[in-house]
Length: 403
Image (cartoon, rainbow, N blue to C red; front, side, top):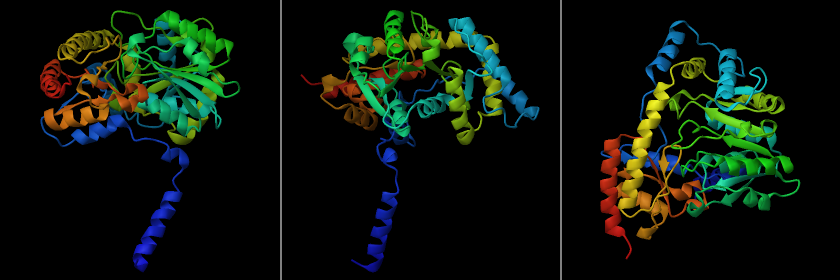
């Protein structure tokens, strides 16, 4: 071995030793992996990244443009503009009947992803356990690890509508270790929506065991044929809940990166301290856009939801018709079909479908162990693209279907 080679080896080992253990524990995002794979490929139909194909409604964009033209480009308060926090408080009271003080119980964040990260770091000490459903959004497990907590995944299944039950949660509660329950309904990736009664049962458990519930409700407005239940609005739960929400999905504002957390003032104060040293504040023009989204005509949301519902019906029927049995999603904009008839793993199915038919889906295994045997198909894309994707998937499934 040459001197240079030995030096390179020592440098490589030195660098490896300086990677934090919590970073080594993280897996790369399974969603972004397939997003990166399809970049540069021509003719790909993407059912991968969960992003509306609608542009942000014009009146929202116009409000932001006007704010820029007026030179409103400075920092805002760490907590967010008073106007946006007041409007959010009004919105949450009007829609769900839960009353938040905009001056001390609401924090504007850089997307819901930051709100989730802040919530974990604000309430967890090293070794604290957080219970969450499996499958669930890819960031849940990682956000717990980054806060030096311990994720405790509870399996959910298609036969029980991918819902998590209070009895299953209680079996996993550990004295002096379990700190919180993390819920995300409507669900990414399954599209499941929890019934009010099952949420009430979880609420009663949380109060009895003095647990905090972190409720990610980013898809609250995207529900089909039933009503969304705001967890914080359940009896006695405002003081036990960190409510997370945002504007990305319902208002087609993914790139604006504006979210929020609503919680008891002690928790918001702790989250705000961390926020001050990391993000400082959400963008000024993004907050102006979010304010207009709440104040403006809500018909744009209704129209998008109606369009998503049409696509939902088409993709679920289409997947079932080609032999991929599919749970009927009641919220969000994802279908989660089983691909077990092909005998492939989720990752193999997604990779080969992309290579052979140029259709991008996300392996269910990216969302947890119970996602294996499924793939996530986002139907927030044009109906004609969904129909063409189904034709390509039919060819693929017919080619590899096991007898």
